Length: 255
Image (cartoon, rainbow, N blue to C red):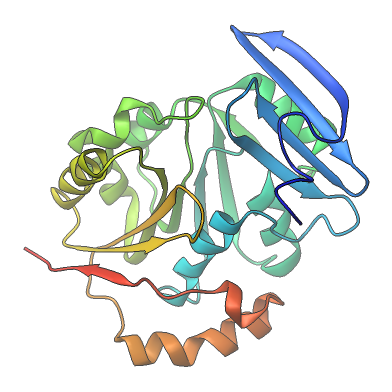
């Protein structure tokens, strides 16, 4: 997959709509189909010949959270987008119980119509902040991939949001955030608010992308040599190449 094949103007436009002040467009080039809002970043990609595969580099960064928690039983996915993780987990980890959340009803509709959201997978239509505040359950894995165009909603710099995620996470769980940081100041602000609740935070930079993946945990992460030993085991289990599973390069000291 190359960036030339996936852009705001490449391929053929197969669907577009205006809804809620947003122009949603779906394009396709042979086996690749993608969703974008106007000239904003690509929101979702699917390989129609291998729909269970993850395609975007940041997705593998978020998946690398399983190196910290290799046996998750429950997952909360905040921001369904193109249902990449729903398809992947349905095929690769069918025993994992996934709770999917999306605040945009149009995105849910497009995920079902164009991105093969598994028909048996329910999606809760709700705001992530509202859901976390009132939810009493607990999860082994919380994936947070929520955006407003090319930026994030204000909740990522709100200590209360991360505190609510902390309460919804099991003791050995991992809270994973896909962050599009526009400046070092913004990154520090998010990290400071995250550290108000989570003692252990690690960061992974996605090469040649604006994405940073943040991993927040309640207990100390395994030593680097343990994570290295887990890579081939997890890659075989998930049927992904070991190179796709990366260990965070930057570890922030705990308080």
